Amino acid sequence: MSQKTDRAKPSNEVDRVAFRDMCKAFADHEIRPRWEKADADKQFPMDFYRAAARAGLIGITATEEVGGAALGAYEEAIALEELAKANPNLAVSVLVQNVAGSILYEYGDAHHREIARRNIAGECLVAITITEPEAGNDIQNVSTSATRDGDEWVLDGIKSFITLGGDADILVTLAQTDPKAGRHGMRFFAIDRNTPGVQTSQIDTYVNRPAPTYRVMFNQARVPASCMLNAGFAEIMAGFNRERIMVAARWLGHMQTALEWGLEYARTRRQFGRAIGSNQSIAFALAQAHLDIEAARRLTYYAAERWDSGVPLQDVILDISTAKLHCTQAVVRVTQTVLHVAGGWGLTSELPAMRWALDALVAPVTVGSVEIQQRAIAKQLGLPVE
Ligand SMILES: Cc1cc2nc3c(=O)[nH]c(=O)nc-3n(C[C@H](O)[C@H](O)[C@H](O)COP(=O)(O)OP(=O)(O)OC[C@H]3O[C@@H](n4cnc5c(N)ncnc54)[C@H](O)[C@@H]3O)c2cc1C
Image (cartoon, rainbow, N blue to C red; front, side):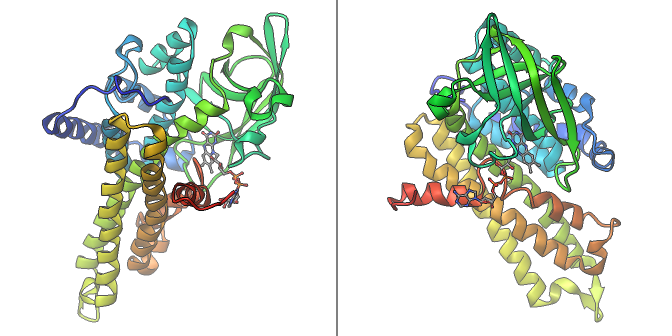
């Protein structure tokens, strides 16, 4: 995902309000009625992807050439926030489409752009396939190999934690084509999941259940040479930056839903003859959660605005990592506060507080963990961290 100044259409406040209203209405109609069943079944509802595509939420920042809306990171953040308010996990399925899709149309040829076009049209689900059992945050250690054999590449290796890996039509996969070149030898491949030698198995996580994660195994999987994209390690590291703004927006949305519910519970739940929210300890904890959310909103949209303004990537990394660090830590605090406010009933499936707290636990882990963001910030502050 490169940062191009010409990609985002100029957008005014009126457009943004209308866009937010559209996203809200979509979340009400397409997420709220679906997410609980998808969560219980641990199965991705494919019709949700098609509905998101019809609403124009796949390829928000993609060029019009591939059917995208050619909007900016700011609008993409609005979409993620509003979708995540209804459910952060169906929201992440949209995020994954927009990240994997952008690799296809930004670094691919006509064949890849056609896959991106179909993805945006709701005809081709994609997954971003990078992480391995021994290469989590340390992506430069990816060891899945791609070996050239005539007109084909032969892939061998195991990927882990691939969101929608078993549902996707196309796996946008990072592999090592030249082990001697280290991270410079890595390339992305757009691989048909039904290729012989590609197998998937679901990983039973406590989080992200409506958009499940998979192991993806490549065992002598032969793909045409044309599957290779002109993108590798450097491009994905640059692309992670926009993705981190979207991750921040996702958790901003989730926090708000949790706090809204917690406030209502604190106003209406009575103990000792009065609302529990009349106790300062409860009220102040919720006030603190409000502070976390307001800071999250300002940091997230500031980072998105800076990204869209086209300032050099180097100058926006600090804003992005700060937003992501805050949002991914704050969502855990806020949902834990709400869980505590809900008392014993919060620990039952009769109330949503536990589900929200569980969902939030993935926030500090993915797309560059809390420690990775702290390291990025420290480097930007001129500290000599490794
Ligand atoms: C639900 C879910 C969905 C996911 N979806 C996808 C997906 O669609 N595609 C994909 O490719 N990947 C995906 N991932 C992978 C995710 O991005 C990785 O889990 C993440 O990179 C962490 O990797 P790991 O679990 O191996 O942790 P590790 O990298 O082993 O880290 C373990 C701990 O060590 C810390 N640590 C590691 N290195 C350092 C360091 N240098 N300094 C300080 N601390 C450090 C980490 O912060 C963490 O606390 C998903 C993961 C989950 C859980």
